[in-house]
Length: 503
Image 1 (cartoon, helix red, strand yellow):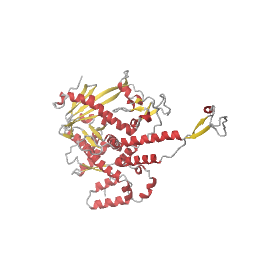
Image 2: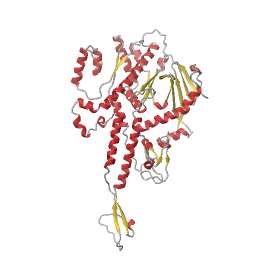
Image 3: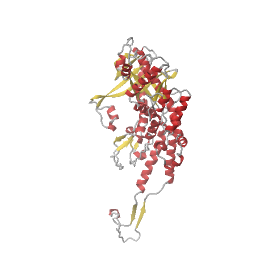
Image 4: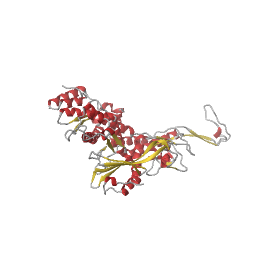
């Protein structure tokens, strides 16, 4: 069976287009974003050595080997695939492969700067009572969905793929709630129902949004296409089993799932056969799209990984070349001429060779030699990665000869200027996305007649703590000045980390 989209009542959504989207477009999307994830995690796979002429002795391969030259790995990579789509090259021996993942720690550092400390949501509702209640509801929803871990996962997915989507899924209790009920809910009841709302982060390889033809910022339909493993064993050793062979043979049954969601309804297909459908009564598409760094005219934002891949490949190539050079030069070798049986005689202290040949010689070669241009080139690659990512080794606590530059708070901020400015850009994009999530959650509770709010009540502010060490006295002095300027006391206290106190 194929797709039957008559349920949506939209002539602009064609079955043929959806077929192309999941059969062809999805393959390109999964390959592209899958490669970004491989470069981030640099996962280790079995099957690195053991072939003819393979003397490196390492029985594994790594994700970033995809970008290395075949003269190093012994494999020729194919465009569009991963390391297991590569083929063995004849007459080329696999050499010392060195991978230094300079991408992962930069992503982790960026996440720590953005969401390393808890953030605060400050309601802007005109009612002081509602402000307190809304903030309690928001805190309950995010705490149920992982708390600070949710925000960090969001930042990781956004940093790797360039964007992250959040699907707001009301729980069964909310869906079954009678929206026409006149019952008044206590705050405890509201919190209990709000905790059933699932905030699902959608990874980029499964996202196939159908955008408005006249406005790329508007999503008309949100399509997810992915492979779901079931808790049952399959006897079919087919294509998907081969795909995951490098991670260990997996015989679990795998089902291809396609989910289509609009503002009015949804459908779920398994192996292109309709298994469930239903209506949505919220009046909006329950998906929030967040770009990592804003990129005009594109649905995707700027990925922190993609810009570093060419430099990472170059770094790994030079490190591998240096390892091979060291392997070759670190051990002295001898060339004996005119000495019978020289190849069978061991090299040891005090050992002598005897020959009647007056022209016999023993020549020594090898030994480690310095290569200053190689070291300079590797340092320049690392500097280029610092500039491209905005994340310097100082962020990771590697000071080296920079200690003299960090004698004051201003000096620290100047040293980390690139990182701080990039974090500020992300605070805006992620902050706006989180505000939309909050607004959507409150709309759901309002539509279900659980907790009534209007547009003014759903407006919130976000406070991101500084990632840098702060002087407590300086913070208190700033708080005092803000209070004198008329900033609400409760907001000042929340910025200081005191939520339940009043002055």
